[in-house]
Length: 98
Image 1 (cartoon, rainbow, N blue to C red):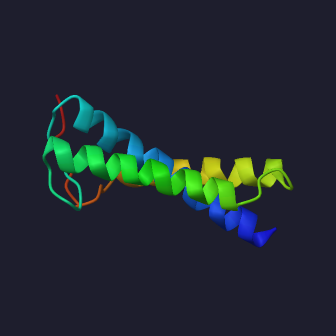
Image 2 (image 1 turned 90 degrees about the horizontal axis):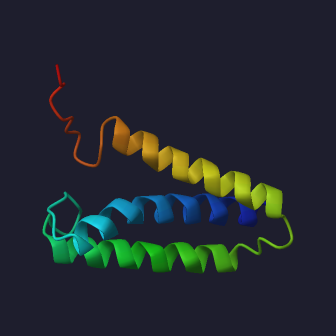
């Protein structure tokens, strides 16, 4: 069960992290990523993260433990969402709006 939970957690994390990068890439907007902030690096980073998430989900054997796999994936998505909503990848916070 532990491999299912760990792999599902990271599948959720990678899939949720892929979304903003992929979207910014296809809309030709800049967004910070490890590979650069341009649209093409973001598109490629998002696409690669979706592929990694799919491979992790496939390897997690979710049919054996669907509830544990779903819960772990949901927690992975929540973890990366909280990370980006607070400190973000580079520790920068946008200025507060009045």
